[in-house]
Length: 172
Image: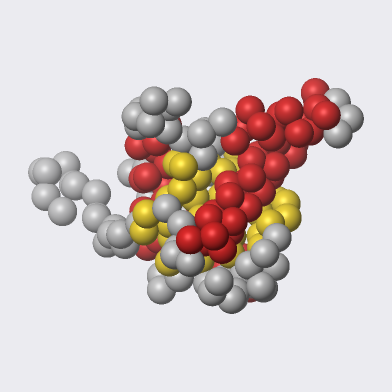
């Protein structure tokens, strides 16, 4: 098992759940729920949720970020998976040289709701923490996979350079 803190990220359309591992890479714990502010093709604001994650990587000296990839039960990828890939690519660009990996997150939100309900958290309060709970499940699965296989989990995200938007003449 590679030592170091890892971040787990559950990307939603409205919120982003964040979990952290301990420095030994054994246990994932909830950290925060961020308001989703970054959008593809938007100018880089520097104060969006991706920037907050990049800052957290620096503060915690993270060695890796694990982003959930929402596949369907059949394993296919739909629009949500495409959005997660785009988000992960932007995150990889901003946290470089820290690596970003995508891991399968099928049913983590469903499991997170179940775990919260079973622990007595009422429905209204669940919305505030379900994204964190999903991030914990994503990160813990990744930690367990690495511990059992001896290999990093999921697939690495390639760092892409940010392309300048086209001007009115269609040129960059």
